[in-house]
Length: 327
Image (cartoon, rainbow, N blue to C red):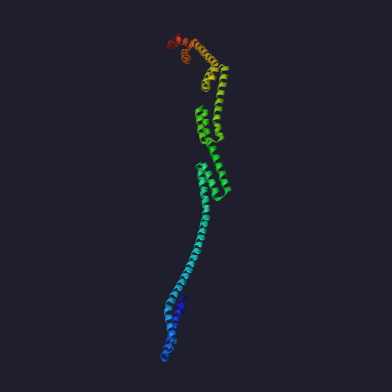
């Protein structure tokens, strides 16, 4: 609508110019017909008509070109306006998206915190201490909350220490049971197994040494008891203790005790020989036979065992006699 007025004005200008040229031509023709010597007006009218006829297409083309240029400029302006509007709109959309992302980040922040807290508790229940520490570090890096992360680490450390104490206590109950049964190898095996599970725990590192110390203390107690039994001539007790202490003795310790051990067995054998003779004198044939069999079993290569063997046939015969019979 804005370009219609200039186009209409351009057309009417040439119409008026054309009519004026025709008018001049007509006046000139009139003068030339009445005055053959007056051709000036007629020539001017012809020139005007020719000029209008020639310049009209050129002017029209120029006018169209100018109008096209104006239209292109107008279109460019409109495109620029549209682009500016789109840029503004995209900027608003980007701002809104950024605000939306931030809003979602704020909205889900508490959920993310709670998710990590839950994960830490699950790792604690499973005894996965290293994983729990890693989650605490992740919590600090993600949310920048060092105080809460330190609280997590303190709780993890406390739970880990409590778990380790419970684990150590359970194993120590088993070890104590083995020690009371004098199953030292089994006790040491349990200690080594625990050490592989808790290699950095100082208490666990000392357990094998504690077991060995208790083993040595038990051995020394047995040796002391053996000496005491020998001193009071409790040969049966001394020999029984000797059987208990024998597995604990090193070759050097056993060598140093050989003389004392021989004396104990010698005294034991002599005591059994005296008891055998006393039973024979008292004609307690059955008791004498029973003791004689024990002497032969415990001391088969001794002189007394040979003497007892020589008498056993006679003792069995007398034991088989009717009650009241004399020797």
